[in-house]
Amino acid sequence: MTLFTDLFIDGRWRPGADGRRFDVIDPSDGGTIAAFAAATEQDCMDAVDAAAAAQPGWAATAPRERGEILRAAYEILTAETEIFAEIMVRENGKAWPDAIGEATYAKEFFRWFSEEAVRIPGDYRLSPAGDKQIVVDRSPIGVSLLITPWNFPAAMATRKLGPALAAGCTTILKPARETPLTAAYVVDVLRRAGVPAGVVNLVTPVPTGPLVKRMLDRPEVRKLSFTGSTEVGRDLLHACADTVVSASMELGGNAPLIVLPGADLDVAVEGALLAKMRNGGSACTAANRFYVHGSLHDAFVERLDAALAAIPVGPGLDRANGLGALVSTAERDKVAALVTNAVADGATLRRGGQASAKGAFYDATLLTGVRHGSEITTTEIFGPVTAVVRFDDVDEAVRMANDTIYGLMAYVFGEEREAVAVARRIEAGMVAVNRGVVSDPAAPFGGVKQSGLGREGGAEGITEFLEEKYIALTADGAR
Ligand code: NAD
Image (cartoon, rainbow, N blue to C red):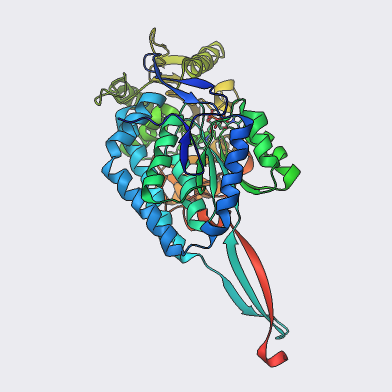
């Protein structure tokens, strides 16, 4: 398998200007997979120059041409799904089924936006006074900086590249330092699909913060699309203010999962497993706090416990494993500390709670008797830990669910009418009712409150990369 370990600038793979590299680590054993090029300030400026030079030409291509390039990239990823998944497993540590799931989800953004490229709407209307024709064009916003996290290294990149390219924007992709290989592979797929030089660039700036700021300071950069933590998102919003850059933010989550009285336990346990354990819990959409009604609590806990016990844990390249490694030992230790503190705060460790001696593995863990408001209910766990709070009053469950600065995702299990009524009361950009997964390229993904600004996917996703231009014409009757 060819691993791309260089920067991609103006249609060419090249090392960083000063030759520095950083190691990419396999979290399942701590071994080094590759030494990836570190981008200097000069490399970052070259990427902005290349994207800016390519912008007018790319904006002028026919929408169908852009759509067909994205479709070709989708076809390549379909033919190479296993390669795609293997790179993710190696640098991220995720289990094989999660990697295949992500590869499938990721490529669908290219197919979806290949179809959206040819459906960019405009508006036309006569002014109320009848004197003007109001024509509204939607044009590409311009050079777009796309910053992605390590937890979904493929899907977060395609979810931004797809709409940006479909809209006619040129791009600079900055992947997380833990997972640059997946991003580099996606970029090479786009190159093979026929993306012209300068339209897609990839940089891995070191140091990250100051060099990202330098790129945002360039007036040619008109868009920042960021997925990552709320803390970094806040800093970047400040940085965007200086050059009034349009910002889309997909930030942290703290999803509540509510099991109402009357829920079907089979459905609730199956959904809870998916909502918690998909991607080993390293998902912004992962269920973080389980609020279970007293009438179902004991049975729910018992069945969830048995289901967690049945998940094989180990390296993702062994395809039988259902739970892989966390991305790093630092992440694993963060999860372990949350569990230790929860127990000190009165929770009962019903299962798990062990970190591996080798590699960044952490057992599937179940905590009961968790206190709402304790650290583990206010912090994004980002690991395979289920924290259960018991409740007796539905209004109180809704209050606890909304008692957070975040508002990305929520899950509600119950009799459908009641569950939908509760879903409508939850402050979140997305609510799953009687199911454990919502993500779909055809649906608008995003959060409210401090979980984000804007939406990715759906009909909304491409609009983040377009801006309106109003052209006023004199109406025929007014001449
Ligand atoms: P992170 O915020 O640490 O890093 C995200 C990206 O920002 C990385 O590429 C990182 O290198 C870069 N970065 C870090 N510091 C920066 C700075 N000062 N200036 C510019 N860029 C900087 O997040 P992470 O640990 O990689 O990812 C986990 C977080 O991402 C979680 O909070 C998770 O909820 C969130 N996430 C959100 C979504 C969503 O759609 N809402 C999806 C996936 C992950």
